[in-house]
Image 1 (tube, rainbow, N blue to C red):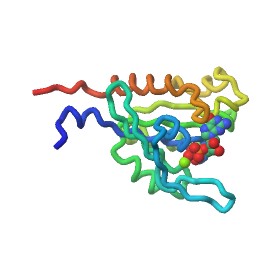
Image 2 (tube, helix red, strand yellow):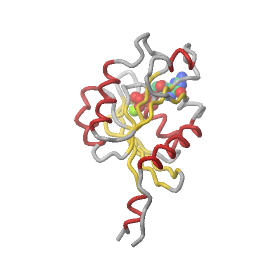
Image 3 (cartoon, rainbow, N blue to C red):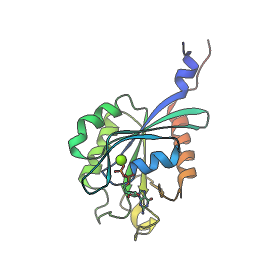
Image 4 (cartoon, rainbow, N blue to C red):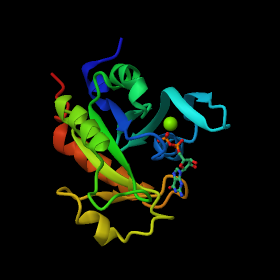
Length: 177
Ligand SMILES: Nc1nc2c(ncn2[C@@H]2O[C@H](COP(=O)(O)OP(=O)(O)O)[C@@H](O)[C@H]2O)c(=O)[nH]1
Ligand SMILES: [Mg+2]
């Protein structure tokens, strides 16, 4: 049986974002042994229809990472996969960002994290191929954002440190009685 202490150290982190922003790539970059439930579309592209599942250790916490499907038609699956999330990562595509910043769909996903009371980080992916500067992107957001490339691994170590800080801010220290 797991004790109180070990239960507190296991945390569920969900990764939300529209399709094609790089959620699956991020889970596999963070957790090289990750696995994904995917389908291959008629044009040969892989689409997450279930979830991506990875596991990493950050600052003594065991994080179970769940990448969610982005398409509206998989909303129900996303809700099931996100159930009980302790923390979240909202992933945004830094390549296709519009002048308004976050799309309405991304804002909807952010509301889902807020509704679940899951503290979250906003990550801008594909910075290796984005035509926008960090300053141009940051000024579209009210919160500080993280810049990464899930593909090349740029910014991933900094992301892990920020996750650790977020967790430490929101996770009570285990008390042994
Ligand atoms: N240029 C670039 N492409 C990326 C990056 N991360 C992911 N991709 C590509 O974006 C596409 C969608 O990635 P995927 O992880 O399947 O997105 P998901 O639908 O959000 O799970 C794939 O072709 C990835 O190779 C990145 O950091 N830079
Ligand atoms: Mg995916």
